[in-house]
Structures are given as C-alpha cells and as structure tokens.
Length: 283
Image (tube, rainbow, N blue to C red; front, side, top):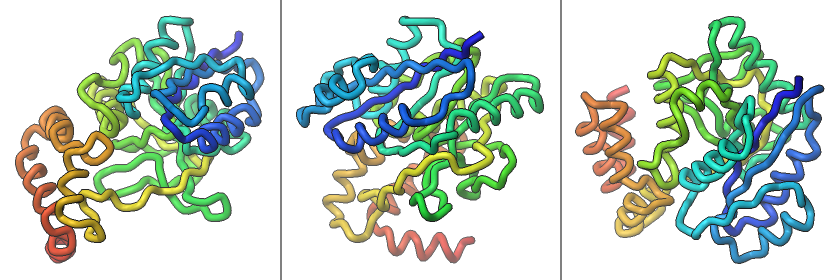
C-alpha cells in the first residue's frame, strides 16, 4: 500500500530559489510505494513564480495568496487545502530556500519508523539542514534550551523545531490540528512542536544532515549593525520578531517567565552589545 505524502510549501517573490528547491524535490529518490503531491501557496508573487512553476512542474497544486500570508499563514493554507483534498499518510513541510539531498525522504521515513518502534507512538521528524553542501555545519533543524541538536547518526529528541523540513504523521495532525492562526510568519513552527509535545508526542531530529539551507544573518531587531530605529521597527515587523505575537507565544508556553522574557527582548533591542556582555557574565 502506497504512503501518500502531501508536501506543503509557501513562497513570495523568490522565483529561482523556489524553483531550485522544487527541482531538488522532484530529483530526489522516492522510497518504494511512496507518492508525493505538492501544495504550494504563491503569496502574491510578482516575479513570475507561478508561471514558471506551471511551466516546469505542471502537477503542482498552486494556491494563490493575498500577499499578506507570510510563512505561517501560507503554510496553514497549504495544509488546509491538502487535508481537504485527500487522506494523506504524512504531511511534509518544506521551505523554498532548502535544497534536499537525494535520499532525504528515505531517511525521514526510516527515522520515523525507528521513533515509532522506540516510543510506540507517532513522532514528528525534523530534517537536519547543513549550512553549505561542502560542510556539515548545522543551520536549521531541532533545538533544546542549550542550543542546536547536531545529528550524530542516531535519532535524538528535541524541543524546538525549525520548519524548513519537517515530517508529520496524519495522526498528529488529526490530534492537534493545523498551524496556529495566532502567528503570521515565524514562531508557528516552534509553537507546533511544543503543542505536539504537550499532547504527548515527541519530536526527533533526523540521524543525519539531509538538506542544505544557508543560515540567515542575525535578525535586525537584535543586530548592533542596525540603528536603534531599525531595530525597533524590525521588533514589531511581521518578518522580524513580531513582539506582540511573541508575547502570545510566551504566555502560551512559558507562562511563569513570560514577563521576564519580554523585558529581556526589549533590553536586547535597546543595546545588543551590552545585553550580550551581561549574558556572557551570567553564564
């Protein structure tokens, strides 16, 4: 019996990057009895992304956005569309800046089965991404309070997840639902992982690096290279920290410490270098 997997993507005005990501997906080696369908939200691109995808990958289901969905809401729409369209066994989150290894899916499914045998219940598997193809340096994947979980040839539990490449079994989706509507761009992936853990599921990072995604530079809201005005603008921006939504996240998942964490964010925005000096002295 075939495993049906819905690949969920969202994009906006990154035509070549998006095409390269999709190309790596279609060139990947699929395990036997595995079937993929791609659901991609084009959130108001004006650079010909939709036209290029239709020309090069006509089987992809393209869902038009309104230009204001960003990552979380775009992925919500893709997931909602896929779930209504068919009964899938798995859902695969895929960022359009991620280039997949040819064996990525076999690795994810193998890690899922190992976690299932170990935990006796379904788990979320987070694909570990390297920063560059030539170097096995961590960029995105799973984390805990101490930092990144570096792949070591074994499945390892994590607490916080990056949404670049994530495999989710339909039973987890049936249990906890879609990405939260409370978030616009970022935060939604971390929120989903914590919701899954709170519901009794586990999150594991893949045994090996299975994709490449260059790490973004330090966010402007806490980057001393930017002016105070630009830092605060980014602090409130949908593509920045989006402090109002971040406070919602803190209240949902860090109820006891949300106020202290919020104060730390403002201090870090006001003076990133001073904050870093104090943080280093306290550790």
